[in-house]
Length: 333
Ligand code: UDP
Ligand code: MG
Image (cartoon, rainbow, N blue to C red; front, side):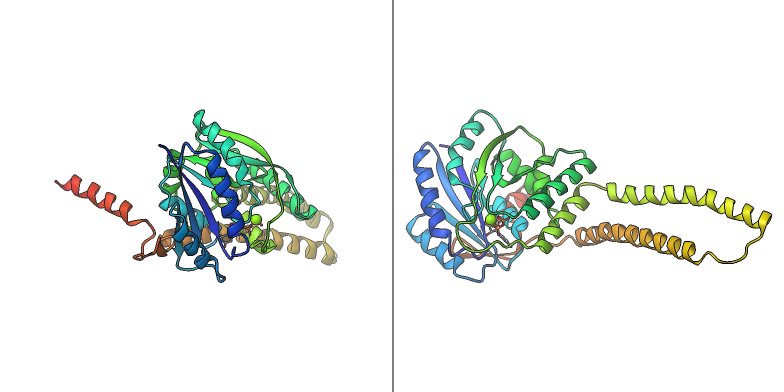
């Protein structure tokens, strides 16, 4: 029997967990040909999320959980989930029921047809402001223009991944993660299905504009170096025209003299160039910051507890480290 893991990253989701469980249970019942695991990743919630998950696990052993040592953010929480998932396929779903679990059977259907990544694309986005819709669509257009891999618009993390996609994603251990880009980057057979995204069932969104801005910068700096090239390009164009301008100024002064004046034009040019330089420096800084963070090479997360067991401080499940150790020993023998 094939195993499917339903992976739910959860941060302060006490208000929706039971509702989510009820709906998942119904769906699971309707696809009885599989063995299901519901894997919660508690991302350092400050409410009763963990105790609710533990209570649910006592009643239903299909539920397992990873409790992270603090709040690491959804991207890392998803990776922790992928590291611990046991299924042949893994379905990533939000805890707040914005991703309807009823789509799961259709995903499985396409998975059985041989697709490796069946992702749900939003047909509509109810419960979101026009500004959020507009900013998100412009961002994707820009990102698409700048990077060579196709990035899926209006698509969240709600998808079914085959084991080989999961193994691929687990190998990408960047600290500053933009998972949405990674799904595209790894390739494999993709299939899109459409759905209408509901507003949050209860609780509050954890995203505000400053966090979305962070994610957007992450998205750009982790998938394309075009901004670096653009700033170099700008510099080049400006130097090119400046060169002729300088020659003209020199010639003019030599021929006609210079009765001073020129404060406004001088000021404009200085300010303009100063601005361009600062922007370019900022862009270089963003990439430098990324290099700094990645070279530290820290573990991406620490697990506090996995299914009632206190975990050691490592960011990979024990069974995997053992496998690695065996692999090394085999090399030695
Ligand atoms: N989430 C998480 N860690 C965080 C923030 C969010 O694991 O630091 C989870 C959250 O519990 C939910 C999912 O990520 O399951 C999506 O979060 P949210 O609904 O707040 O985002 P939105 O749907 O508004 O984009
Ligand atoms: Mg949500």
